[in-house]
Length: 402
Image 1 (cartoon, rainbow, N blue to C red):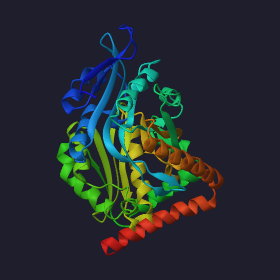
Image 2 (image 1 turned 30 degrees about the horizontal axis):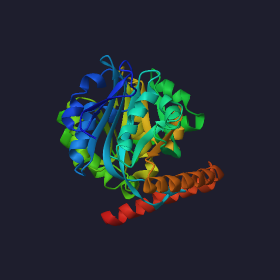
Image 3 (image 1 turned 135 degrees about the vertical axis):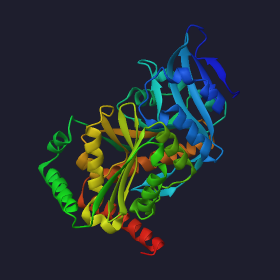
Image 4 (image 1 turned 90 degrees about the horizontal axis):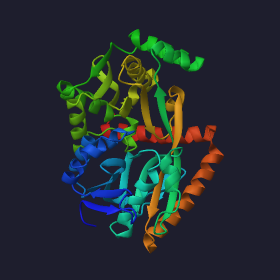
């Protein structure tokens, strides 16, 4: 489809029209429309989005759809056209990784004025009908929102959609003080936090230092401290931890320049052992990465640095919540106080291969939900999660020669 296309969603010229931007310059030309909407996630920030796209180096093309009427932006979808794996997972394991040419909408990359979610999604049908892509991939759509309700209805052209497994999304709604936050925890969690803090602050594990970073002047020290911890974390062993590649470096430099990044590093006897790093956007602090040195796991340094983050952000008038992102974890259940379900949604073109991938994904998702329902919060489920983390820790230790 031609770049910068404008098309009517119906024959009546008084109804919304949509613009599709396919180059960075065309995306920048939508800046005023971007600013008319409220966005829920840092990935939907214009500069963040363009910076990631510029540094990815994998041939992905920007594709941003804006729906408007009389110079008023009614909705937007922010994404990239890319060759994307659509992994089929069962019980946490990937069994097959088919690839499709997708218009992948970034996390939080859907926004619309009330009543216009369906029109925004309808505009996304255009690349499917034109044959530009095999599928539209919507990343982590809140299941209680307008877009989820709209996307599960049939799209024009009879496309088929597959709802992937749901995932819990956790936040902390911050009270006015850290003492109030601690009081909101269970008595057991509150006692553990205080006991662990006293132990570290007593010097039992070594001289304690909490390093706080923000702003461009802190860049080099921040990068060095965080990489020192991340290189030994179990997250790195699982392939999901912080890694200072070209994209991550560019994003952090951008956000530090804008004074939107904050980071906390705990050091013992001068050695960095745990960190939290994230970005402020729209009144919410989005956790970007966390990690700790497994040699200090028994000292709960991960919990300690997390509580220093919460304590500082409770006192920040520009932050009302901390977003832990998608995915479940024991620490999120312990320390967050709000959650909802997100779901990935794949809307495929009515062609043989995309339809086959959709069918397999739907069947696997149904089986996965059944298995998760059977396991629930059982001791077996907890042992499986601990086992994955322990295998990752051993891998990191072997690679580092520890």
